[in-house]
Length: 181
Ligand code: ZN
View 1: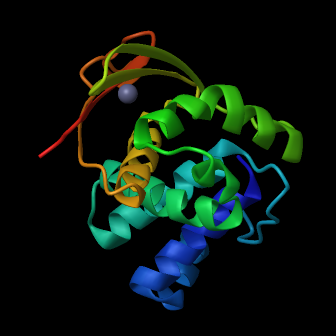
View 2 (view 1 turned 60 degrees about the vertical axis):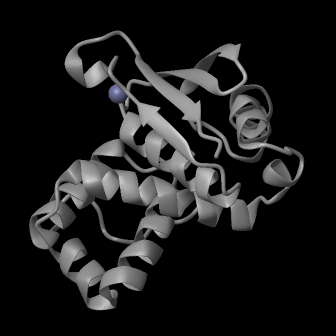
């Protein structure tokens, strides 16, 4: 997992709970030193450990933290790389550009990213299935990122996720319905 992910998690923790909380979490972490360079790779276990400690300290389910983190991460990544959003007029076209445009470009910027893969099923205007595959099984992070994008476009969505790797399925289906008033 790239250092930038840890940098953004630190920003979110400090913004919402103060620097003291981030320091306390790192004090308990045994797998990492707490120094993360944006472009360097760190073991995924470092991230999972930090989230586990945060979950205990904040008395929040790990899933809640990962989902909130995804939402926050969308906004931070968009600040750093606004071009991807600027090119896409709608939430749906943005989501459909993730695999073929964004991941391709981001892979040129950073090495060894091991990004998840998405397969799309687009059968009607107000519906989209994003089939998520990743050995990291961070589908809840993907959900958070999608919600962050939904906020950005002010496009309300309903997200369902009944096919999930955490339930033993081979992939996760993130089923998005675009709501219109
Ligand atoms: Zn899932």
